[in-house]
Amino acid sequence: MEVPPLSLSVVSLLPSALHQPTTTPPSEPLSLPALPTPAPALSPTFSLSPSPNHPPPYPSILLGQTVSIHLRLSNSNATPVAGVKTMLELQSPGARTRLTEVIHGQSARDEGTAPDEQETRAFDNLPRLEPGEGIDVLGEGEVKELGTWIGICSVAWETRDGRKTFQRFFKFNVTPPFSIKTRIHTPSQPNAALSPSRRKRVFLEVLVQNAASQALGFRSVDLEPVLGLEIVRDGDASASTAAAPSKLASLLPGDTTQFLFILQPTSATTDAPARSLFPPHAQPGSIAPLGRLDVSYVCGPHHERGRLQTSTLNRRVPAAPSRARSAPRPPLKDGWEVDLVVRDDARDVAVEAEFTLRLRLALRAPATYTPDQPTPALALQYLSPIPPAPALAAPLLSPPARSPSAAPPSPASQSRVLTPASATMSPGPSRASLAPLPVTPSQNPSASGPPTTGPAPAAPWPPVPELPRRTAPQGTGRVAPLGHSLVVIPALSLQPAIEATGPSYEPPPARTRYEAAADVDLRFLALDEGMCELGGVRVLDMDDRVLLGEWDSLGDVWVA
Image (cartoon, rainbow, N blue to C red; front, side):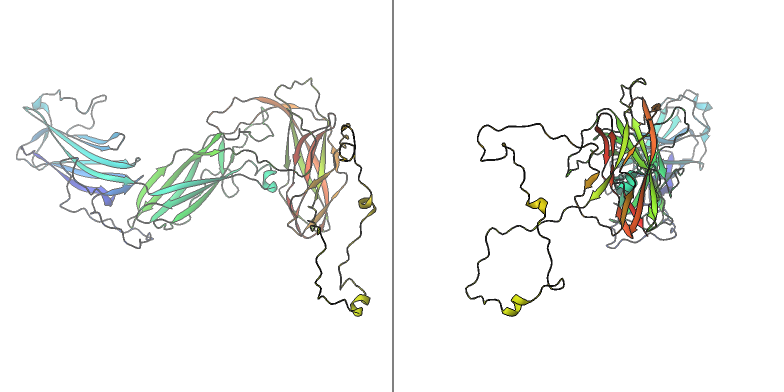
């Protein structure tokens, strides 16, 4: 076998795991040091393999790290070598990437020239690499794919008999540094769901678990939101990044850390055309994109850096929860939509003082609406919460059997006077409870003849302003509504507005809908200190006597 006149040596190779012998990880992994320790020097005996199929074990590095290699190509022959070229590549399981190419005596290859293209210059005109001289080859590339990788260094030179080549290889595995899980949270409590600034927010919880065999530290964990979303950081929506640790904390293998990102739709840049007052509506079950995570980390005692960017994170739009109601409600009116927000986020009120809750009621017409059509006559009805009725004890079917050995009551116990301290007083039956219930012939089983049915009694209008609760109130506070429970809204003038669509992989075309809004003030008197849940509201169409919308609760207030 002919010995090539050129020798290839490795000056440096990073990460250091590529040239360190494979060792068993310690039983108790070491935490990340505050300051990095120097990387170990390259062994003088380390060399690249002449074959890509050299036997395992192969070294392992982490996904997102950067492979940096410095080679030295020297003329080890006693005569000059002409037309020396060197190319460094990285081959992943799915692609082959050229890192660098060095041509001796030429600053750069001519544009459009392929690496394997034959030399067209005459042999005597080629630059010579003199004995003892060398070429430095430096290249680096980020590993973005799991699996087995191969580093390839190709060397070529020209002779009078033609081109001569040889190749050297180094093989390594790429493993994941951590695993990522996400959870999506949306506002559900009425205080947030009725807030104009907080109801559109999406809370993205990111759980990162160290999947490596050594400690990790995160330099930054950022979220790049998709077009149409922005990140809220410390109450500021202008921040471009969200979670960044204040110091380089150590995450041991198997441990998990948490990051939280708050997203909301981007703010309006102009008022013309007018933007919709209604939040974006997405079909339940559809997929909405959020953004991509950009994670920069360091690993091991040498603080070797890596960076990963995930694919786009998504959220599945949940279906609207079905709420069982304890009382019937008026029929709904199709086509028209209403939206309700509480303008003021302040929920602290003073005891024995009057306070006002300002609501913004928005009305949207159907898509087929034209300006010559009439507008519903709206009214807002406050629903006072009614606590659930206490459960009654089941009546006994038969009197309990008396033991024959039971002693008769003593005269003292028969003549003792009952007082509130010694007995619990229970009210007797009222006149209404003693009155006989009306029974129709169809309900009376003893009535003869075919059952008869009559017209159902008309439901009261406006409906009763009460909202039965399924659970008892939790707080100790108490407030009382003031004024009328039914507030008639003045006539609204509908104006065109651009419907909000929100981020989506298949955004629908922007549509213009007719909308209007009105402010409604509800007055209350704070009676007792503590947390108190307010009642709900209904939006009624007084002309057609139908229901446009209903909310079970306006949220909580803190009375102090």
